[in-house]
Length: 318
Image 1 (cartoon, rainbow, N blue to C red):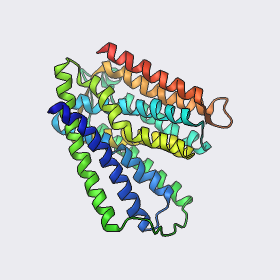
Image 2 (cartoon, helix red, strand yellow; image 1 turned 60 degrees about the horizontal axis):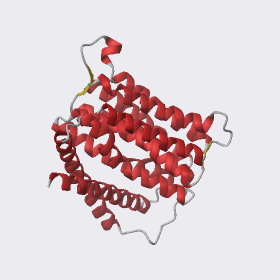
Image 3 (spheres, rainbow, N blue to C red; image 1 turned 30 degrees about the vertical axis):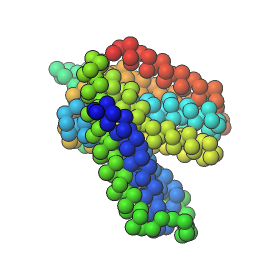
């Protein structure tokens, strides 16, 4: 039954995020909030909601290793799978602002994680952990990022006409409530199932968090990026993945470590390095000797290959 709930939990989690995004977006448009504001805030938060719920439940239950590796694994999947698959669907040409600001901010998030996780190497401590103080630092970075997105939104704010096809405010509220309930229930079942699978097959929580749980909670980002690429909305295809990575580190990991300090095993530094590498590669592929800032199909295939190689190494490490 635990394994069945583990699988069903993913379905409920993804549907919950979908309902939360639809309801929140509709309610926001009722108040004439632009699509840009909705994309930078509600959609980014909605697609990161599965990671947030899984991490909060894992932190509360003391499964701290799962909380850390879920964020790292999700960010790696967001970059290599979501962006890679979207680029295969259609070459992605993005605005210079995304390449010069949002992607470097995502790389910065990876660097901050590397610093807060390595007390042993940086301070000579006996063990490493992401403390509540570190969590507050991460949340402070998130506050700066949120203010930045609002500034960009206000600068480009459009006059939004009322859409007659929008759901009613009451229905939107119901969608939001159902979405939050689905995220909570699905997240709890996923955490319980992940722990059970790890114990039965002798797998560590870290491996489960970096692979199965990470990919499962990244499905909203993967689906959103691929759908955006198919519809020709190329900025959203990359922006969704990059924005979610920033949310995952500064908001999800920050809030999780404030709830409970998160011990860090130095063996996971390889995954911290891969997370950083993914961000650097995305920046390099879009900026270096690339005046049009285009992510082509060949680069998309390379990203999927990189992820397959990473997963193979993760499983080999066990």
